[in-house]
Image 1 (tube, rainbow, N blue to C red):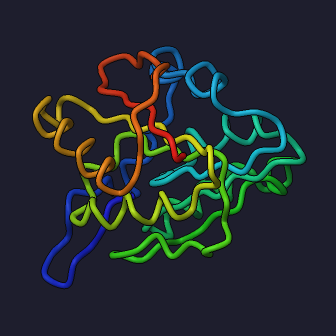
Image 2 (cartoon, helix red, strand yellow):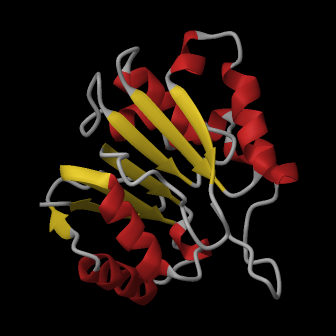
Length: 192
């Protein structure tokens, strides 16, 4: 997702580097369908937070099927434009809803009632993580699951633990069954 502040730009992957987020090597190491299939079923509503050019949005859309919905959230209009270009003219265009957030809010409809949320390699870019987790918690339906994945090259083990503590403060409970993702810290969280 990345965020901007009034003072300066935070660490956010620029649109010009979006091609590096979707390539053959990554698909081999971090296959979206393989990672997400245990958590996502046809007909679900899923949030892809910090979707970038849609690497995980496409996999989520295949998993939720024609009756489901993927709300692909990103701060950068350019990333959402890349995603729109990928799905234009396909059946996935009806499933994926690009949504531009603000620098300080996801700007999600309070009635989103998502069944699943994904934040892959982006929470470290968010300056107000406490607010971010509260907004995700509010957007999930009871029983909803949230998969949090962070890169160890940007996030230390201690920082990841602190992030999980903030998620717990927002109401999330740690769940069993977090997937192993190559070169990543992962946590599966739930809303009771």
